[in-house]
Length: 199
Image (cartoon, rainbow, N blue to C red; front, side):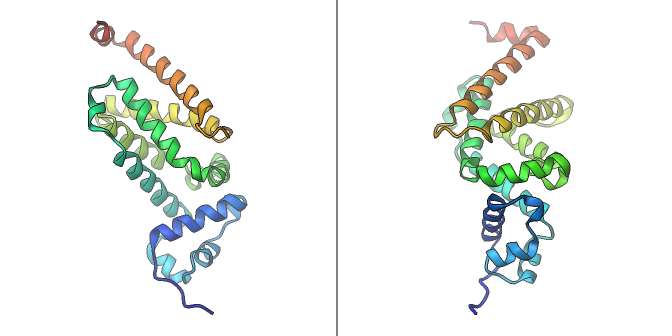
């Protein structure tokens, strides 16, 4: 029997995703994840104390991937376009893991803290998305923006999970429509903002 590999967080995440792509997330155990990652259970325990913690790390990895793709020149674009770019990059980063996500999201509908979009995990991720787009995510109005973006992302996520096109055309079209609606709504709620956006 080969010796267990050195504990590595990314290998645990990848192992968990591989198993989730094969069967319902609720049936995946920590012992199975350790075996898939070729490490001892105590090694996995030293890195992650629960399946939810593994999902936290996966989400943080996606957040970092999205942030690394930010173009400094995009700062001059309208807020709506910046948000579209950030969320589009998120879906592109998630695309290789869609089968696993479908399993995990299904679990989250019945046990929210175990799903990919557990409330705290989702809101934290959307806060980083707003910051990446150059939009404040703190303070009372920041919290409203975070929750609004979370609702928009979740709506688009369910389209994404059924979108088998290579360029995610359906997902991007849905995302574009929702961002346009949100932009118009913000214009009606804040007339000064709408006037400022008018040439």
